[in-house]
Length: 437
Image 1 (tube, rainbow, N blue to C red):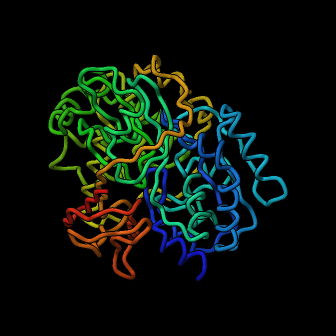
Image 2 (image 1 turned 30 degrees about the horizontal axis):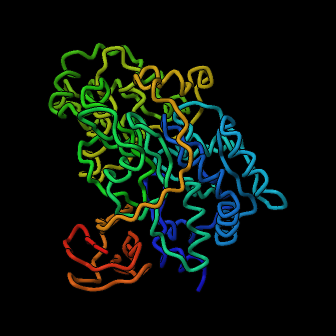
C-alpha cells in the first residue's frame, strides 16, 4: 500500500481549518512541500505546541509527502516569536531537505497565498491553488497525521487550544467527538456567566453559544468570551441587519480595500466595491460581486479596517455564495503584482488583539497532558471539505478503537471517520454517529 492509500485509509484531512482531504493533495506533482505553522489567529497556540512537541513526527511527515509528490524542497513556515518551536523544528530538520522559514508576527500570515509568496517568492494565479506554482501546502498537524497514517494509525484525536475567558488556558489532545464543554471544563471552566465560543478563532472561526459542539478533525481551538463582548455582539448580528447597516452607512472610504491582505498582495479584491453592491442589488450584482471572488475571508476588513464597524467580510461571503450558485467563472484581471505599501500595512497581532478587546486574555496556553475520557462522543460524518460520509454501522453495534465507521464513495471528495475508542453505537443519522463507552 502506497502513502496516498495509507493517508486516505486513515482519514487524514487538513487540520488547520479548511479540512481538504490530504490524500488528494499527495497525488499531485510538485517541487516544494510547505508546512503551514504560521498560526495567526490571536490567542491560539495549537500549531506552535505541535511543532514544539512533535517536530520529529512533523518533519518525517513532510519527507513522506515530498517523496509522494516528487518534491526536492520542504519548508516549515513558522513565526520567529515561537522560539521553542523554532528550536525543536530546526533540530528535527538537521540532515534533511527540510528547512525553516521564519515569519513575522502579523495577521494573516497563515493565508496560503501569502505564505507561498513569502517562502517561495511565487504568486498563485487569481482563483488558483498552490499546486499551480509547484507547491503543496498542509497544516503542521496534518504532517504529524501523515506520519501516523504511514504507521497504520487513523486520525482519532485532535490537538486544540482552549483560551479566552477560562481559568487555565491550555492546549490539549482529546478524542475526536469530545464536546467543547468537556474541553472547557478541563481548562478550569469559563470565567463568564454566559459564555460564547469562537471556534477556530475570532477572525475566521464560527461563533456559537452551543458548548456541546463536538471537536472535529479541523478544530484548532475555541476562544471563550462573554455574550456581551463587543466582537461577539457584532458576530451574532443577523445577516439582514448587517446588510441594512452597510447599505445605509458605508461611505466608500476604501479602508477595507487598502488594508486587505489579498489586495496588498496584488489580487483583485476590493471589499468597498462589494459593499457598494448592497445599494445596487437590482442593477449591479453580477459585476460588483467579482471583487469578492478572491477574498480569503480573513475578517480583517470587518474587525479591524472599517472605521464605521460595518461588515465587508460578510458581504464578500454572501457575494461568493451567490457566485457559486451560478457557477461563476472569473473574468477579471489575471496578473498579480504586490502593492508597494504591502510591508508597511501589515497588521501586528498585538495591535489586532487591542482592537478585538482581548489583550487581557493574551496568556500562554501550554500543552497539558490531561486525559479526557468522555463517556459519549458525537462524530459528524462530514469533517472535511467535500461530501459527508455514509455510516457503515448501526445502533447497537460494538466497535473497536480505530475502526472505520463511515466513508464517502469512491471518486468522491471526503474522508473516512474512525472510532477513537472501543464503544457501542447508540445513534446513527445522516449527519453523525453517537458512541458511548
